[in-house]
Image 1 (tube, helix red, strand yellow):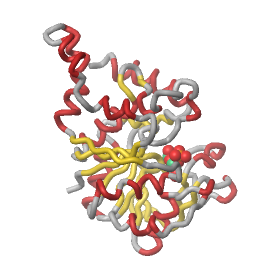
Image 2 (image 1 turned 120 degrees about the vertical axis):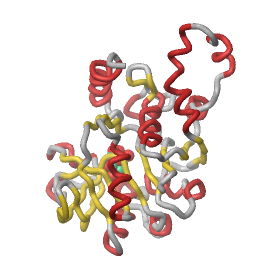
Image 3 (image 1 turned 90 degrees about the vertical axis):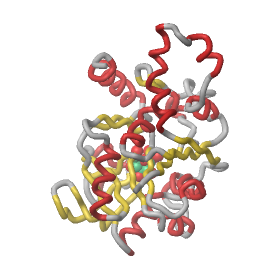
Length: 274
Ligand code: G1P
């Protein structure tokens, strides 16, 4: 069914400078695993094992992470240290990894449009790996189930406090089922007074492929960038977009506070538990 998942990973990670000066922000480790690997594991768990990265300059470490390191494998083969490679070996054996480049930082919408050739004409997932999600059933798996039922684009949402509204795309809509909304408004990073609700989009999407043509015709919006939120609003007006209040926790690992919270949470609840 849905097999492909896009990871826009070209962003600079300025909030984490100087750590991200020469290292991709997606490679920052939460405990012992880079952020992007959590996202890829979530996609693979949901059956989206054809992973496409929309990458850019200075991001080669991501490609290397999902490839074999011969020297390393040779050095630790047969030693007890091999166990530390288990999780990434598993990801590599289950997934395939493709890369395309975003040459200009022209917004999330532009990044998705750059991934078009990797996706072609089928529904696909999108993961913003800054948003680390921890859930009993992965958030993308939850969304894939919903997609099977409704066959339209879906955004994951969560309630956020008023002072955080300006950081997100925000939806307005009609609740059609517990935690599922038919979207009729979408605003990228609004003033709290203009926000249609307190339901903020977090970095998990399922998109139907007509989004590409819409994106091609979407002019730059907030911050003069092509916004996925604006394209989704067009899709909602012409067809259907759902917002889904997912079950689980989400950490904003693009911010230092969120990253530290995620690290503490993973260390206490997941890392030691294995
Ligand atoms: C992007 C989206 C925004 C969404 C957010 C989730 O913004 O444009 O709609 O709410 O991701 O993390 P960014 O955080 O890249 O500025």
